[in-house]
Image (cartoon, rainbow, N blue to C red; front, side, top):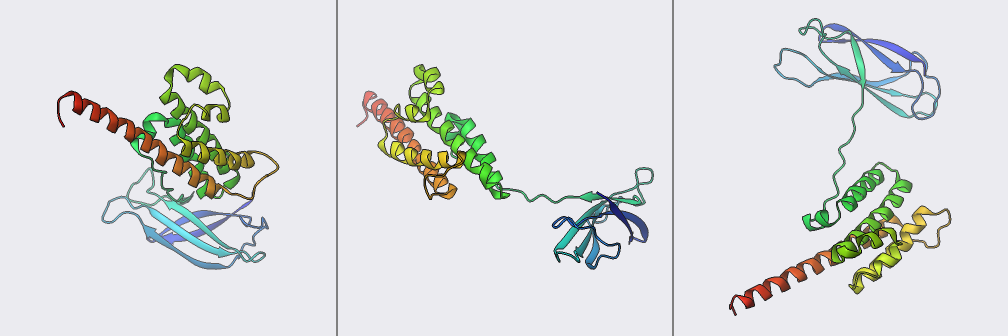
Length: 237
């Protein structure tokens, strides 16, 4: 891609900026005098000896009329820290995506579920919904199989190798079975060419969240029973 050079003044020093030669939206070649809607410099350091910050340049494509934002990192000269480098480097601002949050009990039983679900969540947040749907389906399988293995560790190898539907038969909580069966149908639609149902990934996520709730309920119930037995054994009423 061809580039254009623009010289700007930052703190009374000249800085060269390399602008894209084509529109990021429509791909058309941008003329040298593309309209500039706004530009300026913002410093990232206050009272520090070495100046650095960001120069922003907002342009308008004359062909598709899209607004184009270009950011440039302004840094000190490597040979003289009291001066600014004469070249501004292109900078990218990446929004921080909130992590998916799960109780520690779920993370302990199925760390892979948490990892795959989190990756799928991030993919969905940046618009990669096709990949996110497949990822949520994989996360569902990690959760169900790891919970089944947690309940029956002696069957771990068998459960790991069998289908998700077969692994689900190892779990005796009816609510989890019902939720997972529908979630599997949605997840399969996300991984195959032909969709059998008019359901979407928001519903798949909802079912997965509900499965987590019932798993936590099972775990807490087991823990409560153990504590009651211990309490009775110690002679407490």
